[in-house]
Length: 123
Length: 232
Image 1 (tube, each protein chain N blue to C red):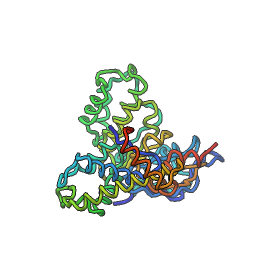
Image 2 (image 1 turned 30 degrees about the horizontal axis):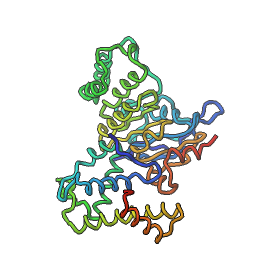
Image 3 (image 1 turned 30 degrees about the vertical axis):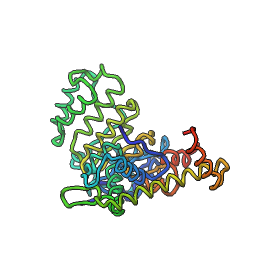
Image 4 (image 1 turned 45 degrees about the vertical axis):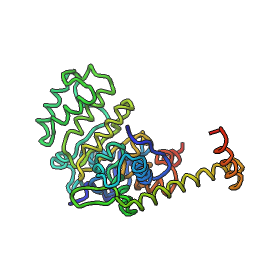
């Protein structure tokens, strides 16, 4: 199945997000070898050069490292992975807060509502 | 290595009508490029110039540094916008025919793709559905080890599942140094596999950008952007 990509954001950013999500979900473990650029491009149904760019960016962020001739691997640096999870969590909270704001809840009200719902049986 | 395609002041006139006007373009190797534009914008004229089926009125066109001719035809694999194969021929006879004709044709690749798309090599072309016929022609073109693939409207009649397969085949089969030039109206379907898009309007090149640059600059897909630029 081609990866599910949005139409408005740059493709390489979405590929980076997807690979990060695959690391978090445990599809790839720390130290795992990633498939080749072409394999990943075919799986995602995207241009190999775009996939290459996404992987280079992940490399620059330190989440992936390249070993010459043997391919790319997921970092074994646990702190780095923790940091990435935190970043993604922050991103999700930011989106949630924006959605709440659009519904007319300010930060405090949103937090109160969240606590209320978590305590009660609504979730 | 020379760029795979260079156009310098390329102009093609049909009588007084200018189908392409002063086109300047250089395409590097190892890219998948879409040629986009409304009907009558000059896409097929450019494709025919690349394949030596038309000659320029002014300017020049070079493929890997050479003028179109026998050599460039050996490194360009071309899917025209209409079929030139006879309906009476069987698919495997056509494969033999291509094998004789082009020394860079890889039969195994063709048979493999036919099998993946469940097309019987013993079938006569005329007995196949419109979509299957298109698939056969695309398979023939993609089974050559070419430096430039020129596909004129390759996926119009093909169902979405086969389209995914074909796109994956294009991604998987083309050599890292080969360039694929696809003319199409179905931008949304192929947007993710493209490096770059060329917009033609009234015979002029009005844009030559990467997909992600267009998305970054405009916050919308190339498909939506195209509809805005060419709104009727």
